[in-house]
Image (cartoon, rainbow, N blue to C red; front, side):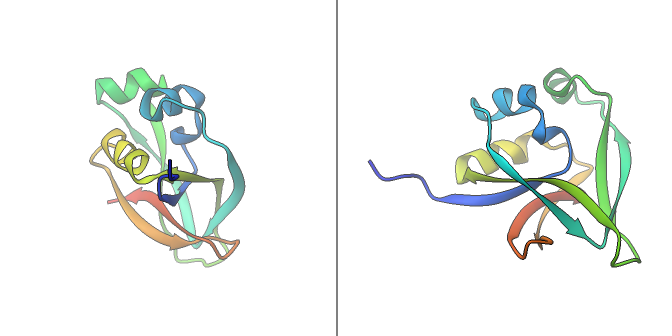
Length: 115
């Protein structure tokens, strides 16, 4: 059986939590450290009951572009399937949008940022 096509997903927030990964993907992800340059982190209040149940957290980090290219947001880079990316899209609330960025390592990856 052929392996499913994979994509890169960068997470700086709750997608790194075991509980969120198990609820969203049915497995724990293996990732490596990386960072987004030129972004800063804020917090957003989550009211979606499904997301609250999965994460156990009322406030989640959210990133947006900064005016300082030296700003850096640390996180994990995961290799996931297209189906898992669709599951991540369903998990993220409407405050977030998915964009592609080039990480500090030079890897291109999807990430969820402030709308």
